[in-house]
Image (cartoon, rainbow, N blue to C red; front, side):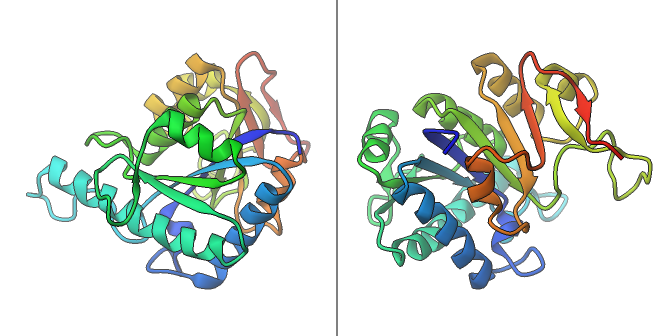
Length: 241
């Protein structure tokens, strides 16, 4: 494996069927790859979004803080679903949450998380950062910095970073590699700006790839050039036409 310790960021939509609810076939396939990585010695932390259950304020009069708290709770539901799937492959998985709920999850502490990882156990970091106004992208960047991850693997519904939205612009080109500075200056939608800046400041590379490609998590972890690599001091390079 290319990386010793990774932080895998999964979108909530990836957990669902057409982006909603739960697609247990997909969850099982993702859990299988994650479990195999851990059994082969890669230390795996995970952050999962909540878009399949809850996204933003639903209703123009809804308070932002209340909506964000609902989203945090939804990430815990997704994390428990993934934990259940992972443990069916005979490997221990811990859900650690920034919101106290001792009956269902362990309180998050970076020192304890690193102990779990060093023991070959998988950790899912739920509840976001524990504060409103921060996305799960920012939570992933924060947890990656705290556990000293070698890289963030950003599994998305798109196969990399593009110069523009390929769904709207037919001339959009896919990057093989791109710097954090370029992502921020061009306002490219990799992660939100807070998450991108945190990765840049802590020198944590981000590998952006399509989750639906066969064995994509395993392949990226092994160092295969799949999707786009985002990091400091790297040449901005497109894939050949």
